[in-house]
Amino acid sequence: KHTLSQELFRRAEQVLPGGVNSPVRSGRSVGVTPFFVKSAAGCRLEDEDGNVYIDYVGSWGPLIAGHAHPEVVEAVRQAATRGTSYGIPCRLEVEMAEKVVSMVPSMDMVRMVNSGTEATMSAIRLARGYTGRPKLIKFDGCYHGHSDCLLVKGGSGLLTLGIPGSPGVPDEIVSHTVSLPYNDLDAVETAFRKMGDQIACVIVEPVAGNMGTVPPAPGFLEGLRRLCDTHGALLIFDEVITGFRLAPGGAQQRFGVLPDLTCLGKIIGGGLPVGAYGGRRKIMEHIAPTGNVYQAGTLSGNPLAMAAGLAMLNILSRPGVYETLEERAAYLEAGLARAAEEAGVPVTLNRVGSMGCAFFNGEPVRDFQSALQSNTEAYGIYFREMLARGVYLAPSQFECFFVGLAHDREALDETI
Ligand code: PLP
Image (tube, rainbow, N blue to C red; front, side):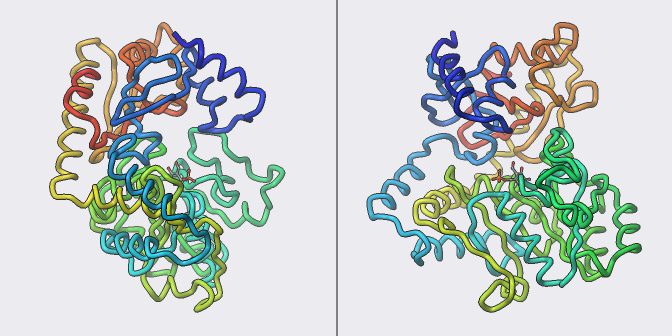
């Protein structure tokens, strides 16, 4: 039953334009069942019509500890009760920054912003200011948010997010972005050989979450590190998805390769809008007034957001958390693989730590709606089966999952 959600969907269409994650887009993506969430707790979502789903994307990533975690709720309540200040220093921002640099191995200093997009955009600006060079290398299929300079080469590769030369995207930006195949170190080397003295930075998702949890080829991150060092460019890890997820210190800790700058988002806000970027002191001090790179933000580091983020990072700092995540994700992976085999559906699963993605016939699913409507394709059957079980996975791109602390054995068993 989706009566109330359908009514909301009709209203949303009148006032909300499309775009990834908009109600209209999500409604269409889910196709037969647009739903609007009324309440959520732990890993369960309840929609306006009272249907219950198990949330396997943690609201697209941030809610690794589950919805309405009591400690996060209480921290935000206290901060709100004390009153908020925007753009005025507060203790919580200092404590949050101390916490973040204590967890992320490559960071001495960190700057708070409001989203993952702001983090990547600002890190690139800093890299350009620090090196005095204009160009950046990004990889096809790695998504770094919705700023122009990162969308021009096709965004995630799964979505048509931006077209080179399209209105609103200055040619100057297009010509400064070099987009290469992910995991292709030779292509990076060639680009550096051709224009090394112009390249400010290489930005990469250390595990390509937006292509469906594609891990780095052996030696790839190490190779990027070496090439950046040789040519005087900065290496930026976009850890918006992987940060605090693959290890307390993110992918860089898990793989043992340290970037110059790290971008964070999603989990860092505990469900409120927070992003951050940081690195070694000598680079971060290039931000004005000690340096010449502009950075600002009315809402950056605000007490509500800092309270939520700090509560979240404290939860993740407890002993055994990452072992629990790993164990639950392995359990889900094995169960899904078994279920797929029994059903004769050609699903393979890519998993790195607690993030994973289902591939059908070796390909990630690109279009959820046609997957759902497809009667002949195995993945259509699989998707309908998942929805029938009330499992909510990433609806618009592919079937990805982020296993969180709230996914208890009961939820996992129900899914499998
Ligand atoms: N970088 C990566 C790897 C992401 O997955 C995302 C968002 O999904 C972003 C950056 C952008 O973050 P936000 O949506 O908070 O702007």
